[in-house]
Image (cartoon, rainbow, N blue to C red; front, side, top):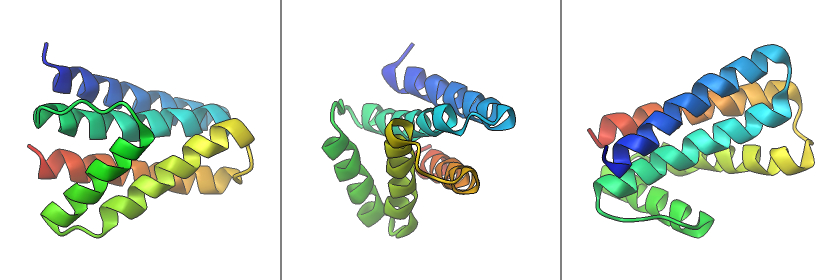
Length: 118
């Protein structure tokens, strides 16, 4: 199985787990699953391009390049929501309704990147 495909499988696994955690009311764990979904979709895109990403900075750099390449100004904003969810995993400061909204932003990011990079 190709690396890009492995990341795509993980991405969908994390999204499903995040939704289940939201239903349980575990917004902290859901936050990290949404972050994982965002990170793995970006890593999947990188793998399709023959690149390996290992840092947060590299994730942001690729999303920035994709935004420029595809002319979609939403990509960085959606990814920033995922980064905030990652922080929430450690700090637990976001209201539950914001976790839900940012989770929807992550789902939009996934949909956009899947469509742009097919």
